[in-house]
Amino acid sequence: MALRHFLTLKDLTRDELQSLIRSAIRLKADHKAGRAGKPLDGKVLGMIFEKSSTRTRVSFEAGMAQLGGSAIFLSPDDTQLGRGEPLEDTARVLSRMVDFVMIRTFEHEKLLRFAEYATVPVINALTDGFHPCQLLADIQTFVEHRGDMAGKVVAWVGDGNNMANSYINAAAMLDFQLQMACPKGYEPDPVLVEKHRKRVSLGTDPLIAVKGADLVVTDTWASMGQEEEKAERLQTFAGYQVNHEMMARARNNALFMHCLPAYRGLEVSDELMEDPRYSVIWDEAENRLHAQKALLLFLLEQLEQ
Image (cartoon, rainbow, N blue to C red; front, top):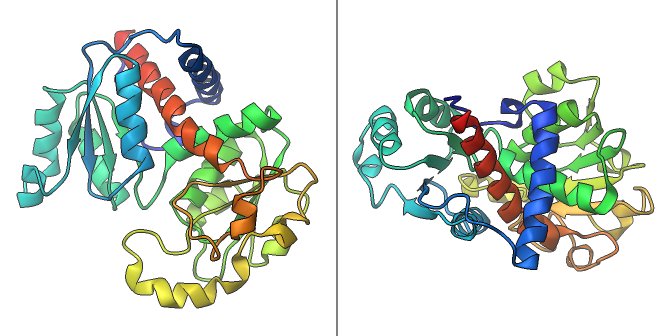
């Protein structure tokens, strides 16, 4: 048995990541053609949510159902986690009852502690440090529309958050250039930036970052847990809205992505969100479903080796 977790993209090799994306595209086609099988028949996914969710919960639940399995929603309000049970104890117990565990939480350290004591695959469904499941969907979406990401240019505009950190990992693994623009004080993990400086450039001017980009990506300026900073962040990020003027500096066939939820009129203009010449956000959102199905099948396959 080869127990594998998915805590960041770096838990996959480059070949595994590319194979997983091909599998996701195939699963999507099979689902639309009505020929999907039930390879997860009898399997159960435990879903721990300390942060609220729409896309993550629905995509994992629907994905398990489509593959013949089932999912159990767990929140701190409904479990002993909310009453102070140690993560280590919860990890040991759940591992004896379910076949996978996905966790959506705040501190990345919590995820690492849980995975250390779990004996089933653990999936990072978002932490403050990384959001690798979203990157699977983003990569799948780009491949579907434009092909291989190697040699391409991706622009990140906005907060140097968990998505920004995950894009740095993706750039290193898939050989694309990542041009990042973040306000001072809101940069991504400096250790990651330094480690991958051959693939990553970091500045403060979004107009420089998007120049020549094949893909422009942004995210909300104030994530969950940062509500008290919202007013300050709105001032700091005022010049970072991705709109048609900014996209005009990218390549003619550049794509725009946002992991959602989006605050229209803040980090992205309403007009750009709705412009099919650039925006592929609805494909991106749908692909969470299929990329995560591919991930679950990959982790199960590793267990069976």
